[in-house]
Length: 196
Image 1 (cartoon, rainbow, N blue to C red):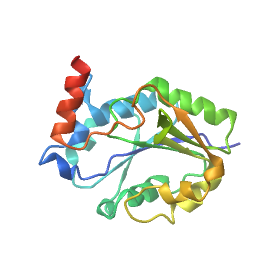
Image 2 (cartoon, rainbow, N blue to C red):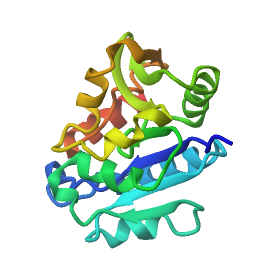
Image 3 (cartoon, rainbow, N blue to C red):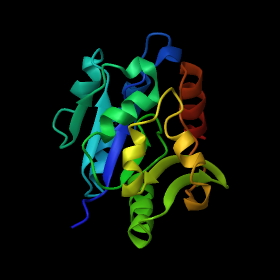
Image 4 (cartoon, helix red, strand yellow):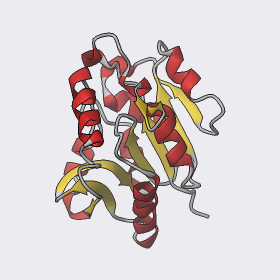
């Protein structure tokens, strides 16, 4: 039997541009963004694994009570690829890569991508906004071994570039697939736009 799809939430970044704050603990709809995105991923029914750095205990605390597996990435400073390698280790099925800092991704979008994956398990699915590629990304099971060869801070970009014929863009509502917020100003501007 084919293993189910795993949702891998990448939450090991340093938030270095937040000037002391933690973007993953910013409040979105009344809860920390990390808690929110994990809860929405779990609502899909798929297993969820969250990659955390060892030096952010408040992130781990934000996940208390949620049925997600937590994986530590002591080498997170090496970049997103280190988190991907840690998070994908030991998994043999398909993998959804879901960055934790995307406040406009919702449960319906996650479920929509999973539904498309079930219809064609060989395609690389990539969330998009008006044709511009973004996240989440679903990697088919046969590409998982190649994740362990990734290096640097560009995630799976090189892996996707090696298989352009298999990449299918999936337009998600609005700019959800592209909206990640890295600075206090980003968060302030985004909240102001939500209040309009």
